[in-house]
Image (tube, rainbow over all chains, first blue to last red; front, top):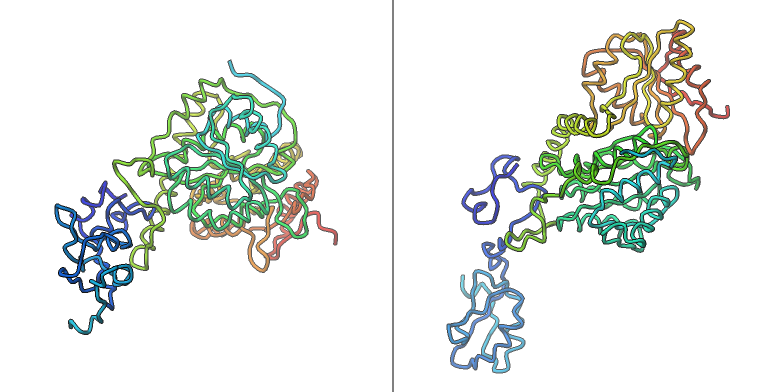
Length: 108
Length: 388
């Protein structure tokens, strides 16, 4: 059976090549979602305007992933496109309209 | 000191549960296994066990609670029968795949309709391909002993597979007979503590159960379950021998009664083997070389061991207490396949008996043997005791 104990070991091992190396019972190890680039699913992109943003943190609270980035003072610094799926909630809840949703094709 | 009591198959299983003292029992009572849960509820009410006893609204919820508790790392037991087992159908393969040990007292009963409540094996046989280990017991003593052994089998780190401990509804479950119980501390020492692998409650090493596995890994995870069953075929006997050392009772995967020099053998499971063994003795007194092979472990199926016993026999009859309507009954299909794989084309009569609690009389077994002896072998199913 699979010898790795956690996600880190699993990641180091690479994709399982034999049935024996697949984690038993179809389990996944904790924190494995950190490594999944859900940003690939996005069709519309939130564009953050730092001049309008007042760091009220509504977008940070409402984001269903971990896509609103902050600095050491807790101020919003932008969007993490590695995780952002483009759901648009942040733009909806922003009281200053500091986030604009634009089609991905604009950035192609 | 072991104590001997007159008890039933259900109470014997419940007594094993008391001594095992599982962490979680989630159950929904259904006849004829109701007695198991009723008796166990008494132990809970009297404070004789520490079990978290979860009473739920359906069998589907009962087995779901069992799977999740086992995934959390708990030692888990439950019981059910017939349509209750059928309602659990969806969750059985999940328990098998998650590799969650559960010891399940399955009291065999026909699946309705017609609603019947009496014994046959149609409930457990419908669950045979979902990765559970199946043990079929001849009497209440074996039910008690198997429940204790099954904990070790199920939780073994190389097996990690749920186990059905089957007994015949009403015949074994409600029949009273002497059973020898081990001391509480002997059972406690034998089963030990569960040492779970990847438990949900291990917050230092978090894992997710039940995530997606698409076409790239589904097959591989199933292959691992097959491996666990292959290991169970090997490891079972070690556990059975260890159990023998504490109890003096040994239960091999197949129970061979006077098969060694027999020309004609009946292959059967569970309580009916008692009648067959009796008939074997009577017919041997009349000079017939007959024997009985009782299949105790049905999953994993000990095909090679069975083929080795049946090799070179003049003819055999395989008795199924279950149908596969429009196809071949489960036990005879396995036995024929085992013989074919061994290159041994022993003539086989397929006999269906005892459906819906239809009695199986000794004279039926004698008739089945006489057909073999007289060369009355045919590929059609023979229906034993049917009105025709």
